[in-house]
Amino acid sequence: MATHRLPILGFPTVPDDTGTAFFEPYLIKATNDVWKHLILVLNDTAADHGIYGKFAVPINYVDTANLVIVWTATAVVGDVEFDFMYRAVGGNDIESLDQAGSQEDVNGNDTAPSAINERMELTIPLTDGNFAAEDTVEYFFSRDGTDAGDTMAAACLVFGLFFEYNDA
Image (cartoon, rainbow, N blue to C red; front, side, top):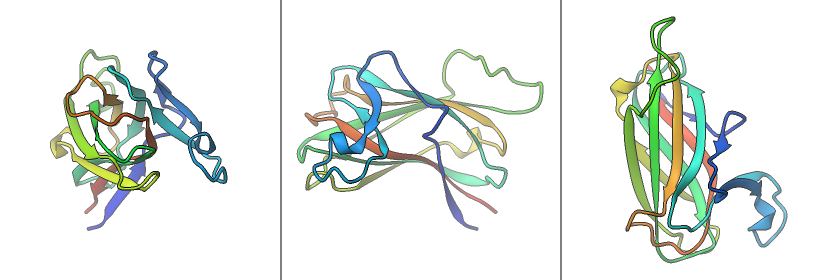
């Protein structure tokens, strides 16, 4: 048995229409201006804002499903609240990809880094039985500024979003 991480940020992700969740080059927020790759910026607002996306559950999926968030911030105090709503759709000519509502809504809270731009990692458990190999998973990942647990007064900079699982 091995643990795998599947990156789920990529071409099928799109920001919501709030204008407070967007992709930009890291050099805009970083101080060294060396690394020019894109990051997901989730600004500090009083709204629940984020991105929509999709991914396929790998064929070797067995169990131990988790969402892993790799992030940082320019703040060193406060907490951030992440939400993840998803629906896994499977089969061939069995389930609609156009469904209302989510299958599961999960959230996780993490504390700001102890120094600006330090790498942070948060793991949020998902319900194993909701996933099967080759399912299509549609999701909304967000920073929930409406939650009292979100007290970090700075943008959250997401470097990676992963579907973590075990194989046989």
